Length: 113
Image 1 (cartoon, one colour):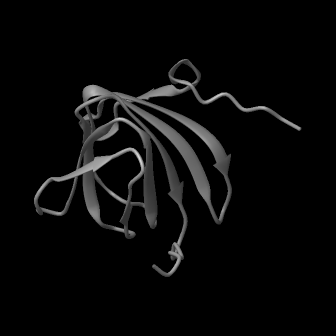
Image 2: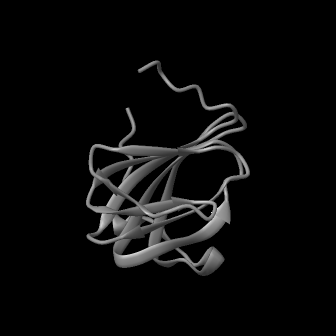
């Protein structure tokens, strides 16, 4: 058994793409999948960037808004997730502090609804 820490103090600050108030803690890194825990401070933002591969953002606490391409901002909160496909420009901002799990993999298979 191995216990992994993923609190804000365990992560590294992310400033790429003009991100503000973001920390990230990588949990899994492989050729086929990456899993990271993100913390976005209230008022913080993950800067606009293209998804390097399909990406699932699963919000576990807090709320904010997400945007893809030049589309409208859409609210997102704990208990919701958003998927961006490879190459899709996107950004996330937090109203209240957001904690989210990010899963990245090629051709992310979503379960049937």
